[in-house]
Length: 209
Image (cartoon, rainbow, N blue to C red; front, side):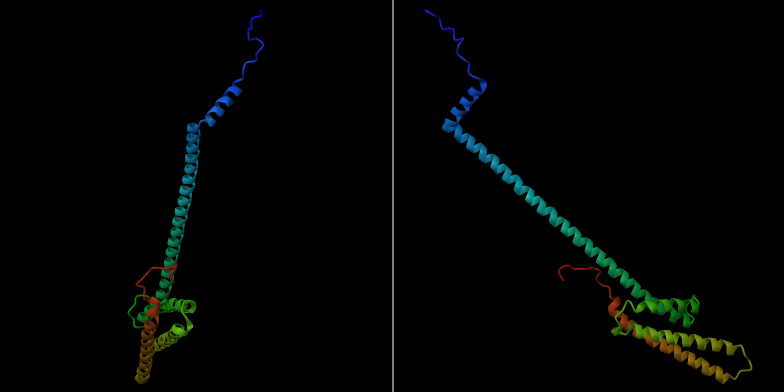
């Protein structure tokens, strides 16, 4: 009688054994429940990560928008301040010219007149024409030139002892009238500039106004 040594039987491979074990596990209800729970937990983790990333992206977008609005507001306030300074400098130029005509400034009249003419030309681009600022500055320019001319005549006549004093008195009176007209128009200019130079709030641009 022959002994069966088992040499003719083929040994099962490791892959076949693993497949059989996985099949046994899948057939077991308890293991099947555990796998379902593990799969559901993995899906929930992915959903949580997706929601978290979406919220983070939304927060970053809002922060970027707020920063952009803040920068726009700052830029607008700076532009308003620059415009205010340019308008105010025009008033200062007229005031310096007035003080020089009355001899109350250390700066020569000719220098103040040159500075005022520059501001006068610039004013047509900084104010609305209907507000009359440019027209008032035009009158100030004309009366300033007239006052300067009369003052030169008075000084020349004062150096001539043979000149009739009545002519000198008349020239002084004409110079005084020109200076008074200059002052009247300067006061008018102040009233016209008041809406432009009121600067209580430097808030700049508002996106919701």
